[in-house]
Length: 126
Image (cartoon, rainbow, N blue to C red; front, top):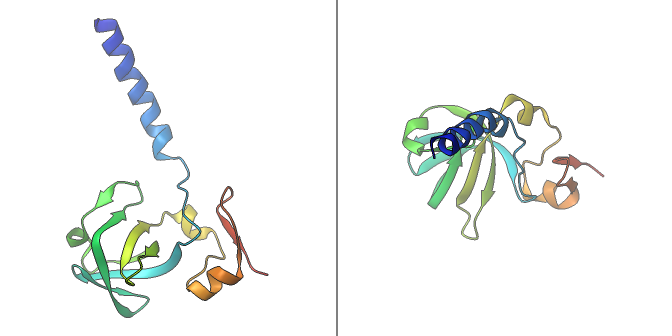
């Protein structure tokens, strides 16, 4: 029984660093922007006032959920999705590698006119 437990713990310890370095897949509806949490749920997005929706999820560079209150005042480069009411739904704080992937649309109009490769996670301008 202890050998099984030891094997399970060893598997988790070995797999955890590999999982932390895996590529995150963003939806084709994700836009890029600069986000500053001012007074949760109030934020600024690309310098304009915006709001986090009810149940909005902010994922850090480690892909773990972050509370908006812990991010107050920080300027963050993010990918985000917007719900049907115009509120931010999902937010991903970008790693340096993710931020280096360019181009990435910053407006819905750009996203509609560009082509997205979901496997490579890259956008191509026409």
